[in-house]
Amino acid sequence: MNEIKTNNGLEAAGAYDRLTGQGGTDPLIAFEGDYHALRGIVGGSSIIEAVLKHPAALVYELTKGRSRSVAVWLVLVAGMCLLAYGVIMGSYKGGVMYLVAPAKMALGVFLSSLLCLPSLYIFSSMGGSRQTLSETAGILLICQTLSGVLLLGFAPIAWVFSQSTSALAIMGFLHLAVWLLATVFAVRVMSRAFEFLNHRKMGVLNVWAVIFIVVTLQMSTVLRPLIAKPVGPVVETEKMFFLTHWGKCVSD
Amino acid sequence: MEKRTQVPVTLAAMCRMDAEFVSCLAEGRNTRSMLLTALEGILVGTLAYGAVFGYWRAPLQAVYSGVKLPLLFLLVVAASGVINTMLGQVMGARLAFKTVVLLMLVGMAVTALLLGALSPVVWFFVAQAPPPDSRVLGLACDSVEAAKSMGVYRVILITHVAIIGVCGIVGNARLFRMIRAVTGSGAMARRLLLAWILVSGFVGCELSWLLSPYLCNPVTPPHIVNRHYFESNFYEYVYHAVQGR
Image (cartoon, rainbow over all chains, first blue to last red; front, top):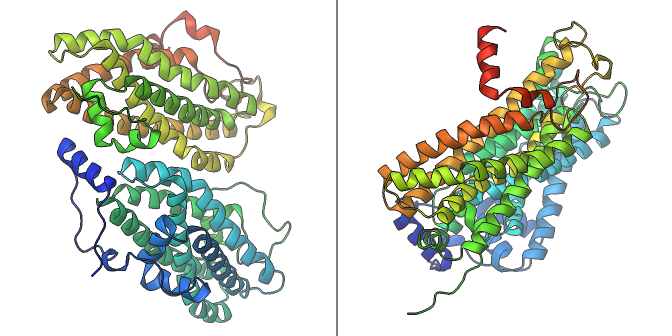
């Protein structure tokens, strides 16, 4: 079993705990045995395998190893997965949606991540994280890549429903449920990464997860329509809260 | 005596409340670095959130509020620093003026950094709200034509107040932990924090009233301060509002 390196962060965390009476780590954090360099060369298949089975190795690479090449591959894998799932979303109506839906899917996730990155950095720092802004961005990138890979895994199921469902609201909620499930798994991995690196529980990340989910749901409304064919412009200009938009879709 | 190394205090260390940061605070070391870091946090965070606060009304209001919100935070500390030090003395905490001001500034900085971190998210949601109708400028607040814009204005205002309130609670929670570390007593920290919240809250309400508007209602053109607010005070306004006058 690989040893966990102690570092100044751990000593400071211990002093902090003595000073403030807080702290404690979960011995069952699964990262422990996988926190080492990725084996072999960095590529698409190794990234996909690592993000599913050994995310700790990606965290190691981003914080101590081949951060640049791993980050580039994570962006490529996440982008390809989101574009592919967007094609499945577009297959519901077909035509121009085969191009529009993937673009909106990738853009929406990218913009939501960008909007929520400052709050992730500050919230995780408040929770005791010692990661820099770029390391925090890297861990968020792992989270989004895992979410994208899981979405791709759900793609065949989503396609089956796309071809056999006529109600727009049902398709919308199906895609939403799939995305939510993928995001929950991905955010769990991200929380474990922060907890492992900082040797403390970080419940504050659950608050951030709620903010991220709400922002992404609103982003989906900003970029609408994602499934239906646009009647006018590619992106509707009428400003609307996402709950209002859902209500309209259900009543229509 | 061995001289301790001066460790640069960063915003991240302040957010984390590193052991080194807390011990510097407790022992009165590295105060200049902590003061500058706290001021940096306040300025960056409140400037960003202040701009978002006024954004819905007009870009000009965003500029005004971006200037006023940092000023409000600093003025609260300036107005209540001396009395908070005296209260600490009479309560038996024996904290120096420098320490009290530093504690207040760091607490404010935590609130400001949270606000700043949330400002992109809040801006995104505010940008989705229907913009103010320029045709209602000059009308009465309760006019039928202004009803829609005023409704949106009230929702956005309440949202901003709620967010600032929550971030303020987190900032005060951090302040409590710092006071406890400095005084070495949880009971003393609770008493001091309550006293400081009452004093700073009392003067803070009045200062925020004088420096308003931060959002500005849609029937009024964007402006930096309302001179009429200097003719009475916040508590008189609340009293008259409750009386229905």
